[in-house]
Length: 295
Image 1: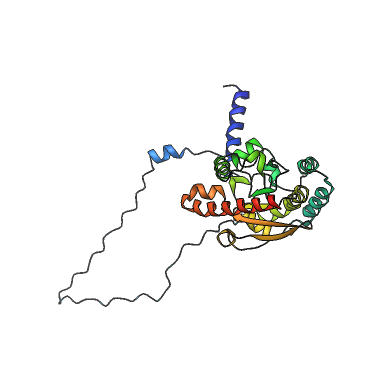
Image 2: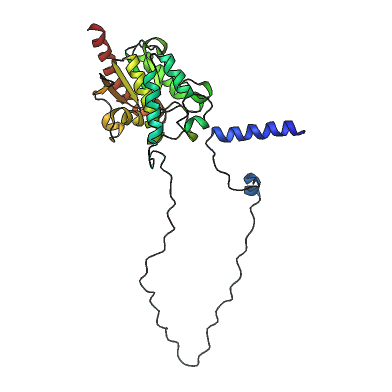
């Protein structure tokens, strides 16, 4: 194998690691854990000599047992787990820059171009493509999800993976077309590593672009898909189960918008029993759309 082919194979492996959220290397030499599992190293504990009881001519008597001091059992130290949903501090300069740039956009194409040139969000450095939006911007219904996943990152379009396919079926069930009747976007526009939830810092940096898109589109109804999207749009800490199934009125850019939080399609794939809750929300959304058309 020549050096060029070897370099291409190494680059492909590193790219695969990157797409799956691998960000840390623990050693310079690789370990074939499959071979280790087949031939585990044998470890022998050192033999301990058996204690011999001293001979006694007198009668055998039980020796008094020593009581161990009252000590709390030792516990293994707890491992710290990183909470990616929290951020130590929101970079104010990046948020300010995002507000200034997004406010200058007079239409969606200008907003897309401004977002493409924006380098204030660190997610952009780790993603392959930006996922701006999809659908019909003239629609009164806007869907806002959490963040792009692996399939979305590759395609540069939101909701194209398994969750997106389920979303298409959910819309079709209430006689809505993805390309004609909805406008779909996310709270952040680049894929977080390992498909984790976006941090507060990342959502706040991208928030001016989301709000500006709402100002330009002027939707009558916004559907927040999942907890992170609902919390971001409603500026609340309440969970999705408390928020879903209820209408919330929010002022965005001087415009009053009705928001319906519902369960994310990815959650429905993991919890099929919750589909009945999402179906209830969809019926409420369809009824609200009919009311707006009659006005």
